Length: 178
Image (tube, rainbow, N blue to C red; front, side):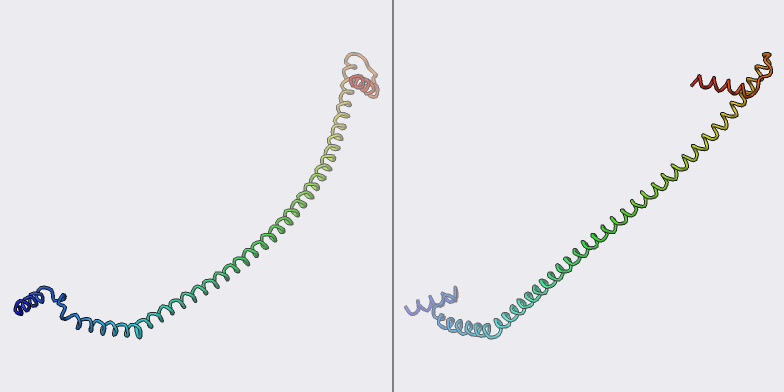
């Protein structure tokens, strides 16, 4: 029986050594030693450095977020100042534009009034000149008509007609036509 046990053990060792129960206590001992050593190294060296890096990153991110918030507030304040300045400038420009528009309208109205008065006086003056020229022309026409009437009457055989009589006759004809 001993021989069969030894054979089985040899057979079992050759086939799957990890299932050999005779080496389990030794393996468990080294497992615990290695685990404890790794746990000690991790807890004393690696985890604190990792935690420190995480804390540094968190602090940097928080600082960057605070700085970004400050910049955002500054930009918003600057934007508000810009909008306020723009609104003031627009209001001033509109006031100035309205003032200029009013001045131009006043100037245009004044110039139009001046031109209108000047044209009216020139028209009246020209009408007077036309009336005077018309009167002079009518007098010349009347004189020429009187002379023509005297010449016609003399050719018809009526002599001794005075220019004043011919003029009175023409005035009488003119009145009858009106």
